[in-house]
Image 1 (cartoon, rainbow, N blue to C red):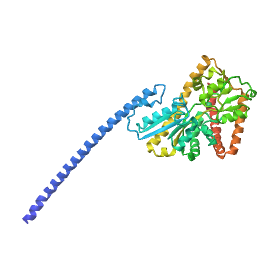
Image 2 (image 1 turned 90 degrees about the horizontal axis):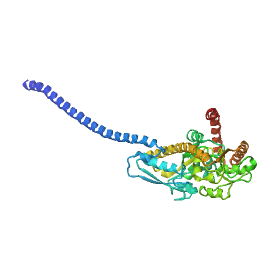
Image 3 (image 1 turned 90 degrees about the vertical axis):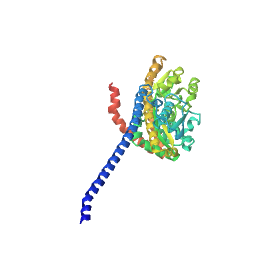
Image 4 (image 1 turned 60 degrees about the vertical axis):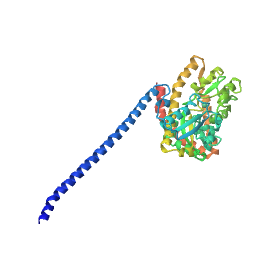
Length: 407
Ligand code: CA
């Protein structure tokens, strides 16, 4: 009895002591977890602060004339994991066109914290201007910056991804490519060449070009020798002129020497820098031949697929940013350059006669039909492009056009 009594007396005490020990151990465990969490938050807070400082430095860059100058973002640099080459069809740092790949490279560098370094090569530094497609296709360069319509010899339908006569303007091109199915078609056409294309800038509607004599009727086009590339050249020839394609670097001398009577190039910003006003007196508008040319970034497919997903996304986002940025730059700089051409150099800025524009428009439709009959991809892309253009035009009649006329 006495043993039973002692056991029943001590047992509750033992249980209470055990419970106390468990409670103390749990309290210690919770305390340790709280300390660990506090230390983690302290570290994250420090990172957040430095990120905030980077964000604060961004508006300073944005207030300058180069809103996409990311070298000023001071992104933390880590060892580069990838070194890429980007070849272009433009002279190194050529205003506008040549600046876009430089901006792209700097943006990718900043956004990837230096993990993806892209060196930009001007025309002829690694490959000639028309060698960009082949170099990126073969993988000897991972990226290129050029114009799709230069490759019409390989892919006739490529012209639609730059610009075609009486086609879409920049706003419509961006809508078609990014929300109308255009980019998917473009990628489909480039896939057999191991290339992934991205829109890479837009100059907006170009100017008609520089002429050494006035154009008053369709007869004045007859026999006229003009540098005008792409389908615009086909149309010009169909309307009675003689189209030639001369590389940009030789244009000034060709026009000065009388080898050609006229040339189109881009618009006031680039044309003023070229000095065409010194050798041709008549500057015609609008640029029916290139109403909204999109530039292109191409990426070698295997190189792109070798990147981790975040770097792939950085390429996509940087290209999209540069695509819009170039249009913004041209919109601002063309205005001031045009004023300078008119007031300082007394250039005759003239509209094409409606009769001449109508002849070019008719010749364009004939050319589209002819090429469609010989190339199935051209016919397919032209139909897709034209369907989007017709719809966009209906809406723009009521909005952009009606508004332009009203103000
Ligand atoms: Ca042009």
